[in-house]
Image (cartoon, rainbow, N blue to C red; front, side, top):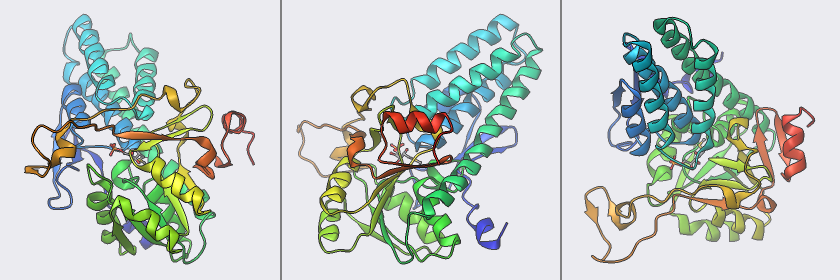
Length: 357
Ligand code: MRU
């Protein structure tokens, strides 16, 4: 592994340390950098809900650790009580956030792992589940690196690339999906500069994407969300790369609120709109974007930020956290198995059946 690659692995969003899970508290970045400890499923579910950890793949990894922690915490219970604690653990994790399908994907994988050895001694079950959670995180980094290599082929030397929200190391176990594409392109010798939408209301772009890029000296320019059209009109954006929380069977893409707006603008200006998307984010059980559950978060995220309030008292608020970009606006999905140009139901099925070239 090159020095550059090692340096890029330094952001450890989740880590197993002293028999517990630790996660970077993303609510306070970039002002403070701090890990918080988690010891059971309920604590992890609260961490996901309150956005200590966020980003679809990272949520999946955290949920898997949540299951493992619950097993470790309950391994000395009688078997019935253990089973009951585990079911409650799965339940609270399932309810933590609705949109990112990686959460449900990871919980399903953990349940299969449990079922495969359900009559083994409880301490053994707990160790197997911990190993499975660790494997999910490790695989996530490898998947992101593979996606990065594919995605890098789509970018040209000198490209100025817009991204929305944070689909970086902080949103995954490492390297990132959209930001992983930038990192891989730079590792391949391309000079890429990043334009980060600030991403109202939670400011993942301003707080997290900008921070990640600055850490690694990757050129980054921050804009407010309403500036993207102006920059595109003036020829200052060559491509868009975003992550996703769930892709429906027909290629419709759910991602952070505001992504749809960027995709419409990109289409209008003839700019390619790419979505970095691990297979774990594709939900074949949902026919199209209309079926994707969209989380509605608390009004105070829109009324102000942290303790600061700027909106008029008594105003009504809407706060959908995600939107759906129709497949027709997506130039390509970048996956670990390759690039799916103009995604649709057939080529997404082909992807799962190993038929893309
Ligand atoms: O609400 P968040 O911060 O969890 O939303 C995250 C996003 O929308 C990301 O773009 C998406 O999860 C992809 S992360 C690789």
